[in-house]
Image 1 (cartoon, rainbow, N blue to C red):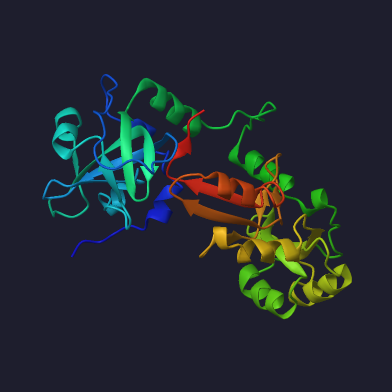
Image 2 (image 1 turned 90 degrees about the vertical axis):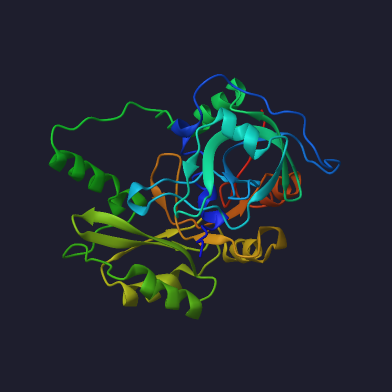
Amino acid sequence: MRRFVPGVVLTVVSVVLGGCTTAGAPTSAPSPTGDTSAAGPEVWGSVAFWTSPEGDLSLCPAPFIDPGWGGPSVCDDPLEVDGVDAAELAMSSPQSSAGEDDGWTWSAHVVTGSLAGNRFRVTGIDTREAIALQDAASAPPVPSEPQPSYSTDEEKSAALFAQADPEQYGCAEPEGGWRDAGDLEGLIGPYTAGYPGQVVGWAPLGVADGVSVALIGAAADADLDAVRTGMQKLFPDAACIVTSSVSAIELQSALDEPLFGPDPYVARSSTDAAGRTTADPYLAIFRTAPSDELDAAIARYPAGMVLLWTWFHRLP
């Protein structure tokens, strides 16, 4: 029996395989076939073409490759393909076998084209323009400030713990020092269920090797005295409490938004512009391609609160 990898898991790594695109001259796909009257705007993306034992071609996000787990399997919801067939692709691209010996093969590419329902109309494969977009998207961010260098691992470790010190968040170290927070999520989960609207974000914050305190994000409109009382019982001498920029009402509204459903992923912490952990929650949603409707819905919430990951991206 063939095993399948959920497509939503693969979307977050769809640009990782920049080194897996086919070498050689860029190619353009032939004229598309089929009904494309409902096709959307042209987009680009890092993808894998999958060829079945019967010679049928389908499309998935480019898979993440871990040699320890063997080859990948085709995703749960592959797209049908117009504009290129399996024979043409095999002639121009080296094919890799799937994770199980069942006759499936695949190859990774960066493509341009347009989406119509569950069908992708290919207009270009591994063009210079598309490869440049992929390289730009996968390039690591350039630090805005010079990065420090360290003489020893111990020096680097001490500096990293200092960056996460709760004093930077305005939290004074209790008399006798910080204690370890222990099972952070296991304790806070039941607390938030019993005190709705009080705590919306949380994250472990390193203070020493093997010791992490709880960075607690009280909702923007929360009763801070109630939060402090509850957290003191849960995490005695192990909690740094800050006010989140996200309110409980905003968070629940986003969770109830039909366009973000059915199951948006909720992360209870994020990272600010300086790379510092915050206790501001965000929602991650996964789609095949961006849309103006989704953009408008996301814009109704604070910047960074709702993050969208897609197989394909708009052309600049």
